Length: 278
Length: 325
Image (tube, each protein chain N blue to C red):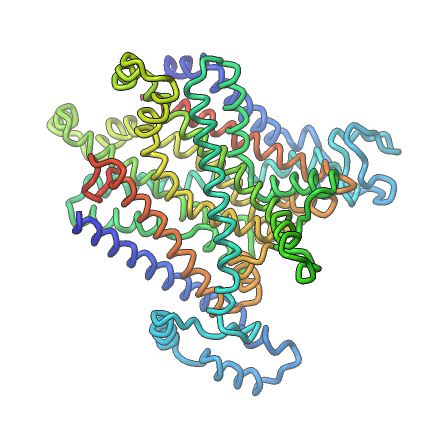
């Protein structure tokens, strides 16, 4: 694995992707240290609202990215929002990974009947319009971060299931897998030691792309007011809050959007590199 | 071939049916009562009961479901609870606006994407290729609602050039033919630009890598050796072979584009299906939600189906209709 990682690191674009993601994850983890104040904290609304980026307010507090309409520090809210957005992305993909590997490997090992049923289920799930379902659930029940993760996870596992299924079928016919079975290895051991490592590159690529996707979708829901609820704020709700201050304080909406684009670009670059390794 | 097509069709029908059933169950499981929404907080219990009865909401769920299904198959989606008008009319009014946006942006983004991708794949300048890659990756990464916001910021507020609301101006009815057309164009510009830029990024990336793989393929070397011009090699040989996977992408991007339009329509107040759906979900307008969900499921399925059949037509090697996934 280490040789492969070094190879990935040597490629300029991948390095850029890894650096972008690394820095953003680090900033999100350290949000409490860098910006210890609660992201929802307000000061004097009149004196500190809509301060431009790089200004210092009357209390001597420096605002890197300025303040919003309630005088809250945009940089701080961005950092704390990163935690929610990244967590939603990561948890969603973890859930997709578990379901996808389970469905894909069971279908791969099982007989034709079971496989046909599971693959049919996968096709069906792929046909569900994700956004419509999300809109429906979010609007009908009380929207929350948990619910968004559940729905995104339950509608994101299909590509992984397909990849794992294809790889399982392909590897099962290979002599070394027969050898492993002959040596007394159980199905689980064969799956985890032999088959899944082969499926890892495309699955990891699909996962990284999926994280970017999930973060964007969550942001979209929050943008419509159907995602994470205030006073907690994800990047989507931050973009939404910048929507009506486009004219006098464009930085409120621009900053979280740029952060979102950076994460998705980082994911794309890394996914490209991981997918090409085989 | 025929058997493959029949199988695809069967699966498509099953998916639509499944989605519709799922929507129905979710909708009726959810808290919230359309009768209460319609009559407001001052309604008495008797009034609520009466309203539920006229809407058929007091019957058992399976009965309601079968009743809805048998009517929907005949194209009757019932009456909108919130607006008191036939759902079919509502959707028929909204449909052209969405279709216009989707078709135009699909065409524009793929034409531009193919051009940019082909340019990148055939240039020897690493700077040009890298620069265009950076641009297309970033564009593809942008969420539609954010890009829309940025475009409004620039074109509506800074440059005061384009309107950002609705499909036509308030005075549109009083304008002559040409000014009216211009008014339409000015209104569609920003939503169209938003969807096109995002779609273009993805398409260009895909085309570039697809054509890159072919750059040193033997048949292209032979074509060059035969003395064909650069243009002929690219247009006749490279694009024709390299664009086959792009067709699949085209079909697959139809549902993504639809979901993209939901957000973009919400921002630009574009009077399309997405707008109708969002409002209906918020107002518990059961019949409208059901119809809009059905339409979008059909759209997704048709997109996939078209992609699979088209690939079979373009590439005879895959002509069985059962395309390798």
